[in-house]
Image 1: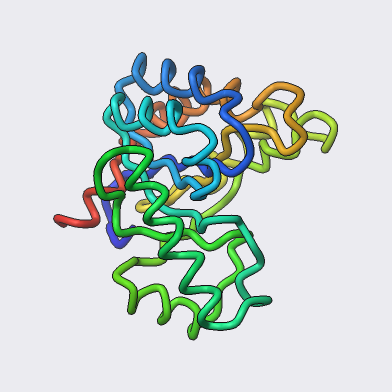
Image 2: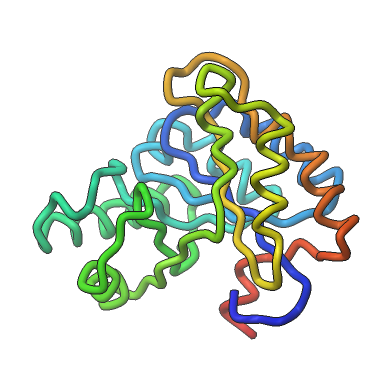
Amino acid sequence: MPTRRHVVALTFNAAWNEQGVGEVLKVLDRYDAPATFFLTGQFAERHSDAARAMVAAGHGIASHSYSHPHMEQLDCQARQLEVLRADRALRKAIGEPPLPFFRFPYGDTTPQEIAEVNALGFADIEWTDDTNGYLGTAGGMTTQKVVARALRAVAPGAIIQMHVGTPQGTGGVLDAEALPQLIESIRARGYRISDLRSLLTD
């Protein structure tokens, strides 16, 4: 985020299943912390209850494409379809327009692809660092490593990327488990957790 203020934003990608969503929402509510959830269109279709719960809890919803492809492997028309189809799915799931933000799958972007997304009315929102919590314990991650990776990104305007759900549909969601300690540690450093929606008004 373009600021010198001591603020960071928490974001969660959702492309697999709803595992961990309830826990994350409870923690965010307990700490009165805002977050933005970047959903794929397929997630919104399959887990509309989870998407609506995010909105009901007061958090922002934005697009993470429809099917989470490698965008560079698609032609311009197919990339546009991914963006527009995701937007339709999110609108149907949550009953209102999502934020005009788009996060590219895998963070794979090119100036041309960003320009295409911008032309459709969306701003590309990526991240300062990813916790890698989605790798799970099988991928060598722990809650302490999740927190450490997030804290190394803390700086004015940092955007931290996390995930809900699990790629294989099994195991715990480390980002959900680490979230209380992460929020407390961020605030202990004198930082406030900011809502990405402030980018629309600042």
